[in-house]
Length: 305
Image 1: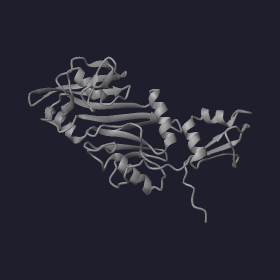
Image 2: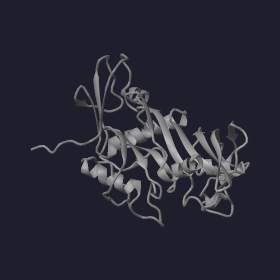
Image 3: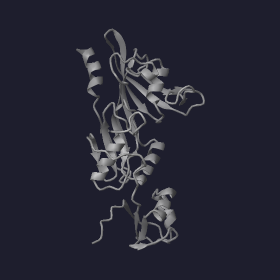
C-alpha cells in the first residue's frame, strides 16, 4: 500500500501560451532556493501529471503541480508538547496568543518550552513534515499575537509581505511619565550598543526604524505618572518599541534593560493587540485582535477605580 504523500503541494493553471515553466514559477513567487530544494531534496514538479523540468514550455490551461520536499526540523529544536493558545489556524498559517514569560524560540538561558518547541510538537501531532517558521516574533516578556508559517514557502511569502509593509502589527504599552504629544511618529535608526550583545540603542549608523505612537490615556498609579499608549510598527527592529520609548524618555513599565522600573510589573508592559495581513495563498484580508493581559489591565483599571 502506498504511504500517503504528506508533501506540501500547490497547484496552478498556466495562463500564458508558450511561457517557460521557470518564468511562471517565478511569477507565482516560488524562490530559487525552493526550486533547488525541490530538485535535490525530494520535491516534484509536474505539468498535466507528468514530471517536467523548469525549461518546459507551457500552454494555456496546463495544470502545474508543485510538491515541496518534506522539511527537516531545525537541529537542536526539541519537539515538546504543551498548551498553545491558538487564535487561528489553517493549512498554511498559525496565529497564537503568546503569554508573557515564554520565549518565541529557545535560547541558552531558556532552552525548552518555547513557542517553537511546542509548535513542532503540534505539527508532529498533525502529521506535518515541517518546522516552526516564525513570521512575527515577540520578546520573551512581551505578550500577544504571534504568526507562524507552516511551510518554508509560506514563510518566504510572508517575508515578502513584511518587507512591502503588508503585515501590520499594533501594540499597546504602559510607559513611565506622561507622554506629551497625543500622536507622533518616531523615526530613529536603531543599532546594537557597543557595550552589549543584547541591548540596542538609537544611533546614527543603525538601521532605519519607524514607530507611530498614539496616547490612549494618561494616569497616575500610586502617585507615579504613567501613559497607556498604542504603537504601530512600520519596521521590525529588535527591541524597537522599547528602544524608541526609552529614547523619548518614557521607558516601558517593567523594562529594566531600558530604564524602566519593575516596582509595578515584573516584565515590560507590552502586548501585541492587533495583527492584520493578507492570506499568503488566497489573498483574503485577515485581522486578529487580542485583549491586554490581566497584569497590564490591572494597572489601568486600578487607576480608574
